[in-house]
Image (cartoon, rainbow, N blue to C red; front, side, top):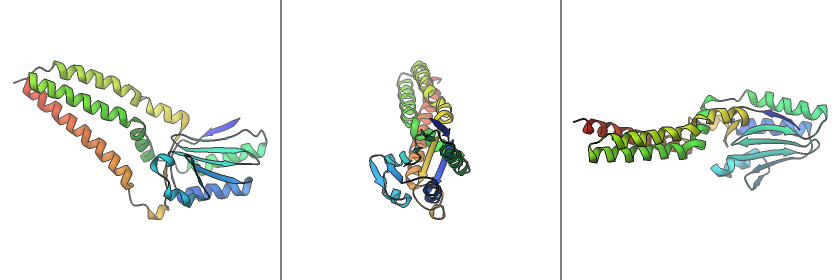
Length: 210
């Protein structure tokens, strides 16, 4: 098998159209899957759910090439021919221009949001206990647990480098204005949770020292 990691990407419908066009010129039939759903063309991904957009595959025959986009971003072929390997390399060059730092942060939040929210909950519980008992010990204990929970999040960037990550925006680039509503809602809810946890922790510390 010959494979290339595509990095951390943000792809619009325009980019997927270019990708499918390239594959159509180089290979046989091109198929698009989003989760368990099948799309005839990139425009059909407008109807896909957020979960389906995190599991998109574009597959071809003659030669057999698989492009995984979503929670990972790779292009691979089981064909040993030079033309198949050259096509995988061209896919890498085409999509490499769509690397995005913003997609990195969106991916880090989506993959680690359970841990982020759990950290906020633990900090809030510890802060409330410290506030009630006027003893900072519970806050310190829960803060230690929260710190340990951050370890899986720290390994997120390492994982992205090994598997890649792709945020698919199922609309034309000209139609996009800033973050999508769903992404913005996810980020805002996480930020609010972190701010509430931090505020309660600060109040608890102040009260315990009085």
